[in-house]
Image: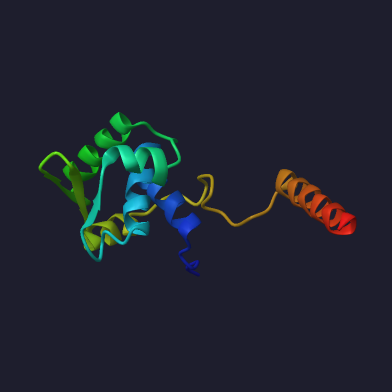
Length: 134
């Protein structure tokens, strides 16, 4: 049975297929910004600082775009050194997502285990305490 694709699931799928955190972040962000529908006008510095909350620096973001371009997943144009114009090849990304990935990899299984149960119980208790205090 195929699971519904969510934003979280898409990121995990991209991460496992691309094998590089910065590449998965950049592609996921471009898809979130609908660069598969229309060209996304941005700046690499803006992406790294604001869209990705500083998780990668502008050099890592630029290298990720370069790798994604080499893979044929995105097209990047630089407009007069003031803007980066990014277009995602939706068909290429769909094809990438068709490549099989083991269900044994983290994030690919839906199965709970003891740590997750403890975490969820702790979170539920904390939420209940906040609600009781209100």
